Image (cartoon, rainbow, N blue to C red; front, side):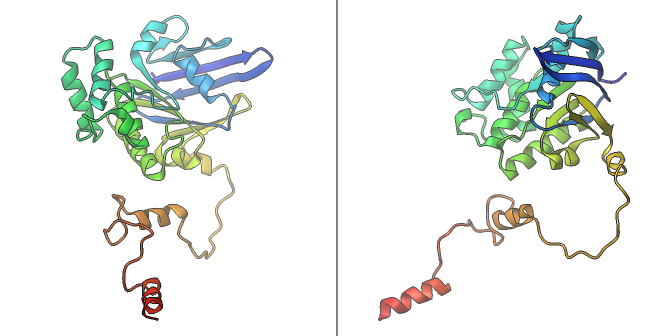
Length: 277
């Protein structure tokens, strides 16, 4: 049985028909990317699957439970991470995790928090207030909070909006780790490279309908065969960014980057000559 099954879902807001008969399935333990432009209906689909909205027509099930008639069971089976990190900035990272564990009435919330901090490489920052976290750290904490109680299905609604390149890659690795651990991930995104990096299957939602659904290889096969041509490959902006910044924010020589000029550079030599005059 697929972890998520959607059949002919329709949803309208007065005269605006957002979903016009959407169908797709998501296999257990896989990453499924739902692509679409702004207003395509991605968030509306997520809200219906997470029981926050009721569909006008059609059926949907999550983890074997009908979203309309078994909403409580669906909510126990899922976790939803929205477009913006829902963390309490006044609390520390560890306190945020403990709070959610207590709200879920779990035993030993302190150990649960410590385990998740270690899992998401946040142990050293666990005692700091969430307000001091970078964008990537906040998103990782947000996802860690979503995993408390080990939900089998997690919805990620545009999870990397507003993140810098390094933070995006951190979140990508987190999502991959979730799927490797058996969690089913439904990801909505506007970034095509994100879907290409993460998804086992990709569906494109356009004007209220799924117009294509398949693996990356299947989607590429829809286009004419590639022609073999000699092309001089230029580095991408991402290649330049990480070559300059380095893995840990240091330059390619391992030293911190910056606009300062060292003695002996052409600019410094010119200034010394000017001073000697």
